Image (cartoon, rainbow, N blue to C red; front, top):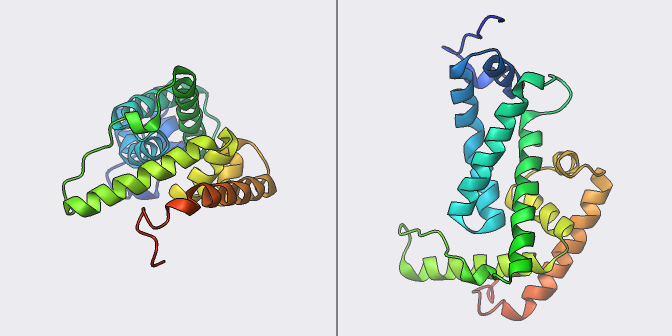
Length: 199
Protein backbone atom coordinates (compact mmCIF):
# COMPACT_ATOMS: atom_id res chain seq x y z
CA UNK A 1 0.00 0.00 0.00
CA UNK A 2 1.27 3.45 -0.83
CA UNK A 3 1.65 6.05 1.89
CA UNK A 4 -1.45 7.92 2.88
CA UNK A 5 -1.42 11.58 1.91
CA UNK A 6 -1.16 14.21 4.63
CA UNK A 7 -4.57 15.85 4.86
CA UNK A 8 -3.84 17.81 8.03
CA UNK A 9 -3.19 21.07 6.21
CA UNK A 10 -4.22 22.48 2.88
CA UNK A 11 -6.74 19.78 1.97
CA UNK A 12 -8.41 22.24 -0.42
CA UNK A 13 -5.20 22.27 -2.47
CA UNK A 14 -5.22 18.49 -2.99
CA UNK A 15 -6.78 17.52 -6.35
CA UNK A 16 -9.90 15.35 -6.32
CA UNK A 17 -8.06 12.61 -8.20
CA UNK A 18 -5.29 12.48 -5.56
CA UNK A 19 -7.90 12.09 -2.83
CA UNK A 20 -9.63 9.33 -4.79
CA UNK A 21 -6.35 7.45 -5.28
CA UNK A 22 -5.53 7.90 -1.59
CA UNK A 23 -8.94 6.42 -0.70
CA UNK A 24 -8.28 3.48 -3.06
CA UNK A 25 -5.00 2.94 -1.21
CA UNK A 26 -6.79 2.68 2.14
CA UNK A 27 -6.99 6.27 3.42
CA UNK A 28 -10.49 6.79 4.94
CA UNK A 29 -9.81 10.48 5.63
CA UNK A 30 -9.40 11.03 1.89
CA UNK A 31 -12.88 9.59 1.28
CA UNK A 32 -14.36 11.82 3.96
CA UNK A 33 -12.73 14.94 2.53
CA UNK A 34 -13.65 14.09 -1.05
CA UNK A 35 -17.25 13.42 -0.02
CA UNK A 36 -17.43 16.74 1.83
CA UNK A 37 -16.16 18.48 -1.32
CA UNK A 38 -18.28 16.72 -3.95
CA UNK A 39 -21.51 15.61 -2.26
CA UNK A 40 -23.09 19.09 -1.99
CA UNK A 41 -22.53 19.67 -5.73
CA UNK A 42 -23.89 16.23 -6.59
CA UNK A 43 -26.97 16.80 -4.43
CA UNK A 44 -27.55 20.24 -5.93
CA UNK A 45 -27.41 18.87 -9.46
CA UNK A 46 -29.75 15.97 -8.62
CA UNK A 47 -32.29 18.16 -6.78
CA UNK A 48 -32.41 20.63 -9.66
CA UNK A 49 -32.88 17.88 -12.23
CA UNK A 50 -35.38 15.76 -10.29
CA UNK A 51 -37.16 18.34 -8.09
CA UNK A 52 -37.43 15.67 -5.40
CA UNK A 53 -35.03 15.66 -2.46
CA UNK A 54 -35.53 12.00 -1.53
CA UNK A 55 -34.87 10.86 -5.09
CA UNK A 56 -31.90 13.23 -5.32
CA UNK A 57 -30.42 11.70 -2.16
CA UNK A 58 -30.77 8.22 -3.69
CA UNK A 59 -29.05 9.40 -6.88
CA UNK A 60 -26.26 11.14 -4.96
CA UNK A 61 -25.65 8.02 -2.88
CA UNK A 62 -25.61 5.79 -5.96
CA UNK A 63 -23.21 8.14 -7.77
CA UNK A 64 -20.82 8.23 -4.81
CA UNK A 65 -20.97 4.43 -4.49
CA UNK A 66 -20.01 4.15 -8.17
CA UNK A 67 -17.13 6.53 -7.56
CA UNK A 68 -15.81 4.44 -4.67
CA UNK A 69 -16.12 1.28 -6.78
CA UNK A 70 -14.02 2.66 -9.63
CA UNK A 71 -11.44 4.26 -7.29
CA UNK A 72 -8.90 1.39 -7.55
CA UNK A 73 -8.90 1.71 -11.35
CA UNK A 74 -8.85 5.52 -11.51
CA UNK A 75 -6.14 6.89 -13.78
CA UNK A 76 -5.04 10.36 -12.79
CA UNK A 77 -4.86 12.85 -15.63
CA UNK A 78 -7.38 11.15 -17.93
CA UNK A 79 -10.52 12.87 -16.61
CA UNK A 80 -11.58 15.12 -13.77
CA UNK A 81 -13.33 13.34 -10.93
CA UNK A 82 -16.02 16.03 -10.75
CA UNK A 83 -16.71 15.77 -14.51
CA UNK A 84 -17.03 11.99 -14.26
CA UNK A 85 -19.36 12.35 -11.26
CA UNK A 86 -21.54 15.02 -12.96
CA UNK A 87 -21.94 12.67 -15.93
CA UNK A 88 -22.99 9.77 -13.67
CA UNK A 89 -25.50 11.97 -11.81
CA UNK A 90 -26.91 13.37 -15.06
CA UNK A 91 -27.35 9.85 -16.45
CA UNK A 92 -28.97 8.54 -13.26
CA UNK A 93 -31.35 11.53 -13.16
CA UNK A 94 -32.19 11.16 -16.86
CA UNK A 95 -33.02 7.48 -16.28
CA UNK A 96 -35.36 8.41 -13.43
CA UNK A 97 -37.02 11.17 -15.44
CA UNK A 98 -37.62 8.75 -18.31
CA UNK A 99 -39.19 6.25 -15.91
CA UNK A 100 -41.44 9.02 -14.60
CA UNK A 101 -42.58 9.87 -18.12
CA UNK A 102 -43.31 6.21 -18.87
CA UNK A 103 -45.08 5.79 -15.55
CA UNK A 104 -47.22 8.87 -16.08
CA UNK A 105 -46.04 10.66 -12.94
CA UNK A 106 -45.97 14.41 -13.57
CA UNK A 107 -43.46 16.71 -11.93
CA UNK A 108 -46.38 18.59 -10.38
CA UNK A 109 -47.27 15.44 -8.41
CA UNK A 110 -43.91 15.34 -6.67
CA UNK A 111 -43.54 17.22 -3.40
CA UNK A 112 -41.31 20.28 -3.47
CA UNK A 113 -38.62 20.62 -0.82
CA UNK A 114 -39.88 22.78 2.04
CA UNK A 115 -38.12 26.08 2.70
CA UNK A 116 -39.48 28.17 5.57
CA UNK A 117 -36.82 30.92 5.57
CA UNK A 118 -38.45 33.45 3.18
CA UNK A 119 -42.03 34.68 3.48
CA UNK A 120 -44.93 32.51 2.35
CA UNK A 121 -45.61 34.58 -0.80
CA UNK A 122 -41.97 34.36 -1.89
CA UNK A 123 -41.90 30.61 -1.24
CA UNK A 124 -45.07 30.09 -3.27
CA UNK A 125 -43.76 32.20 -6.14
CA UNK A 126 -40.39 30.42 -6.11
CA UNK A 127 -42.11 27.02 -6.07
CA UNK A 128 -44.43 28.09 -8.89
CA UNK A 129 -41.49 29.30 -10.97
CA UNK A 130 -39.51 26.13 -10.23
CA UNK A 131 -42.48 23.93 -11.12
CA UNK A 132 -43.06 25.85 -14.36
CA UNK A 133 -39.37 25.56 -15.26
CA UNK A 134 -39.33 21.84 -14.41
CA UNK A 135 -42.46 21.22 -16.47
CA UNK A 136 -40.99 23.13 -19.40
CA UNK A 137 -37.64 21.32 -19.09
CA UNK A 138 -39.48 17.98 -19.05
CA UNK A 139 -40.99 18.82 -22.45
CA UNK A 140 -37.56 19.32 -24.04
CA UNK A 141 -35.63 16.48 -25.63
CA UNK A 142 -33.47 14.86 -22.92
CA UNK A 143 -30.14 16.11 -24.29
CA UNK A 144 -31.38 19.71 -24.58
CA UNK A 145 -32.79 19.61 -21.04
CA UNK A 146 -29.54 18.21 -19.68
CA UNK A 147 -27.40 20.82 -21.46
CA UNK A 148 -29.63 23.72 -20.36
CA UNK A 149 -29.70 22.49 -16.74
CA UNK A 150 -25.93 22.01 -16.57
CA UNK A 151 -25.25 25.41 -18.16
CA UNK A 152 -27.84 27.65 -16.56
CA UNK A 153 -28.71 25.87 -13.32
CA UNK A 154 -25.36 24.29 -12.47
CA UNK A 155 -23.30 27.13 -13.96
CA UNK A 156 -20.88 24.83 -15.77
CA UNK A 157 -18.88 25.99 -18.77
CA UNK A 158 -19.46 24.64 -22.28
CA UNK A 159 -16.21 22.60 -22.23
CA UNK A 160 -17.21 21.03 -18.90
CA UNK A 161 -20.66 20.19 -20.24
CA UNK A 162 -19.10 18.79 -23.41
CA UNK A 163 -16.97 16.44 -21.30
CA UNK A 164 -19.97 15.35 -19.22
CA UNK A 165 -22.22 14.74 -22.21
CA UNK A 166 -19.42 13.37 -24.40
CA UNK A 167 -20.08 15.85 -27.21
CA UNK A 168 -18.24 18.86 -28.67
CA UNK A 169 -18.48 22.36 -27.14
CA UNK A 170 -20.13 23.51 -30.38
CA UNK A 171 -22.83 20.84 -29.92
CA UNK A 172 -23.33 22.11 -26.36
CA UNK A 173 -23.84 25.65 -27.69
CA UNK A 174 -26.37 24.37 -30.19
CA UNK A 175 -28.27 22.30 -27.60
CA UNK A 176 -28.40 25.12 -25.05
CA UNK A 177 -29.46 27.71 -27.65
CA UNK A 178 -32.29 25.49 -28.94
CA UNK A 179 -33.26 24.56 -25.39
CA UNK A 180 -33.40 28.19 -24.27
CA UNK A 181 -35.54 29.14 -27.26
CA UNK A 182 -37.91 26.25 -26.57
CA UNK A 183 -38.11 27.14 -22.85
CA UNK A 184 -38.75 30.79 -23.66
CA UNK A 185 -41.58 29.84 -26.01
CA UNK A 186 -43.05 27.37 -23.51
CA UNK A 187 -43.00 29.93 -20.69
CA UNK A 188 -43.93 33.04 -22.72
CA UNK A 189 -47.62 33.00 -21.82
CA UNK A 190 -46.82 32.51 -18.12
CA UNK A 191 -44.53 35.53 -17.60
CA UNK A 192 -47.12 37.60 -15.77
CA UNK A 193 -48.36 34.69 -13.65
CA UNK A 194 -44.80 33.88 -12.66
CA UNK A 195 -44.11 37.47 -11.61
CA UNK A 196 -41.86 38.43 -14.53
CA UNK A 197 -44.11 41.12 -15.97
CA UNK A 198 -41.72 43.88 -14.81
CA UNK A 199 -38.56 42.22 -16.21
